Length: 285
Image (cartoon, rainbow, N blue to C red):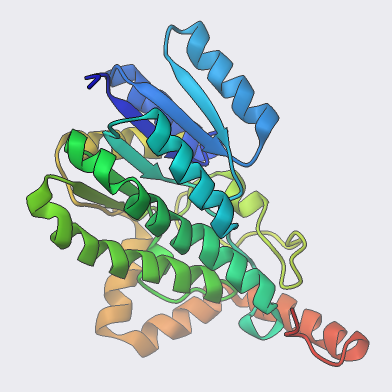
């Protein structure tokens, strides 16, 4: 069996995924399996790694497609006897009120943000066991508290949290670790490509609280937490205070949330009015 370490990263072609690959490559010698839906961008990233003397392979997959994830797992298991690190970074979000968000959008968000990480971790469990590896899940503070206009995203990240908190204890004695990462606001394409309620691209500006961090800043914190053996990485900013406030004084938190994210209500009501005028049902599909 080869002793070469293998790092698998989803959503690796840009944003936090690519920043994490770079942060890992600066400190660890490993072979990288880069996963993304964008073939051209992915091939470019692999080429960049190889120019630096780092072995990388591209795996193109739509993580919202269950059969595509199954094929990806099969291919990864065929090529790699061990997986030292699985970084479940790929994600999508929406910016739309629940009342104007189609079932199709909710299912897609849940598939990418929850089902795919679960299926990858389960499918690669034997290679992770062989390596004494670690699963890193990029969750969100939205998994700890509600955020207007992100009901589906909050639900997916909340499910991710609960699943892998349980999973960790079930595999701990087998030598597999889990690091849950809970960023607040990071400047990545996930918000630039946020879905609208009908599955198109959200047109209104993202609402944020506190400082928006760079992917590089976040990636360095993730790698440091991984090396320190941490099991959870939280942001020390207003979003963490918000999580405590939601737990201790939920009504006060909800009032403040509505104030900070009121644009979501205004845009959502306009969309609902337009849907009511043009369609008999906003929730088909």
